[in-house]
Image 1: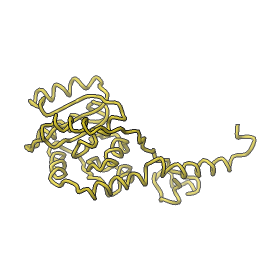
Image 2: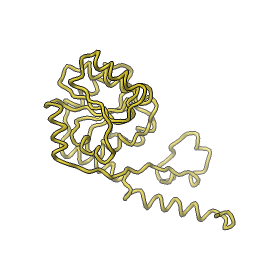
Image 3: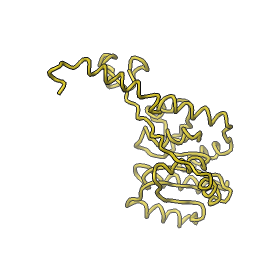
Image 4: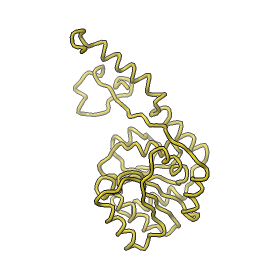
Length: 231
């Protein structure tokens, strides 16, 4: 996507002519499979509670899942927390945190194949990414593709990626994050709002939308390479 079309993105690149700048949005893999019985089983496991979902490495540094657990602990509302991702050295600490807070009955941690994530996105009520390091997360895009409200940190990049479609929160404390989650859960999106979020993502991050722009970019670059340098 040309910078001249969408405006400057990275301030440190502004010394370069706009015609030499290109954005490369990561397209979303639409390989999701859906099963109504699986979605119902997830919701049944939550026992009628609203579902808060996060997807990513089950750690405390990159994804800061411990902050999300602490925030859900602050909620008096019946909430079921689902953390999906690969286990690591921090995962045992997260499980200890859950057990110490007597939250085993309202927290699920496991890993599922990517195509099956669609069932979990459809079953959830809100998506949260607590990462203090990641300004762009495909899971945020995937969640919004499924119509979910997304809560994340207000990085410049995340604001660019999600525009006004997300709930941005500094997450300075578990209480602050809990308040943001509570607000989203108390304002369930309408079918029209879900469809609008999904359409926003499809227009910006689907391969069908990005493929012609990728092709244009590569053809433009190839056209400026000298023939003897094209090997």
